[in-house]
Image 1 (cartoon, rainbow, N blue to C red):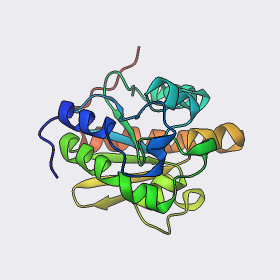
Image 2: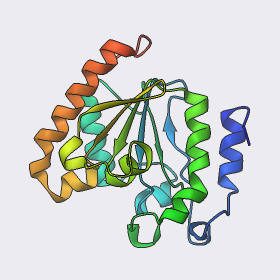
Image 3: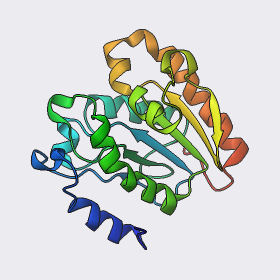
Length: 195
């Protein structure tokens, strides 16, 4: 099923009951950012704060993500879009199950077809394994760019993983610097903000 525009996609997504996550959600977390962004960030699914607010990455992990984005001139308000594999919170923030991912992945595919990003950044193991490769190892392959179709894809550490293990921060920051360089190379319409 193809959706004609963002409003239709958002409306249909918010009505979705394709998996059991719909029974326990407060909000469907469709995504946030610029619908014409050349860079799409994808996480695994909403956590507690995201479920309450209806926006991805708004808890402590989201605050860290915003700081790392800002350090390379990116922000959800100006030049990226952020979405998740699943749009409803898994109980107790567990990883989304394979059947939950399967029931929900078409919403992300629709978002990709509307955005047509040049770069996709997978935040964490679950997103990278679903989007880049089932055997993707974030600890070994973070920061590497892999071309799939017309999209450059990169996996990096999930902000929550960095909060749990601050020793990951230098490697994660290096990934964001590499991302900035790729944006300069392939994204002709993305203006980096340095406020």
